[in-house]
Image (cartoon, rainbow, N blue to C red; front, side):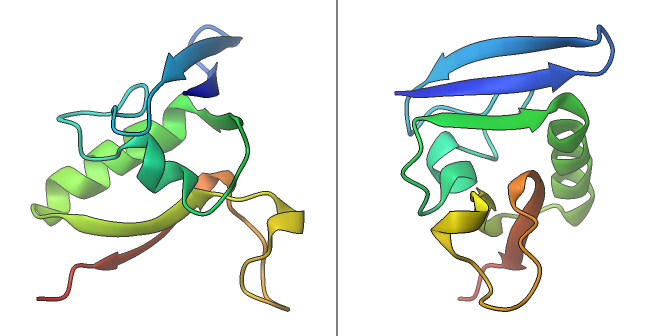
Length: 101
């Protein structure tokens, strides 16, 4: 069970959710992004994002029209990533690619 903090920019407040690994992320439409996909390889019990990121995911997924592989969207800097490149996975960016068949 993950504790998920979501900043809601509409209300200017943090919201707290508790979700299992196979449950959809808060503000996620049609179950297209599960907690385990968002978490990726992070071992953190506390995840965070904001409502705008989830709404952007919903829009992108709707326009794309088919499943999108999410490597991870949440990773703390000390948990590794793209070696000497950008570490931008603090719940506001998504490492994605289209699914290969």
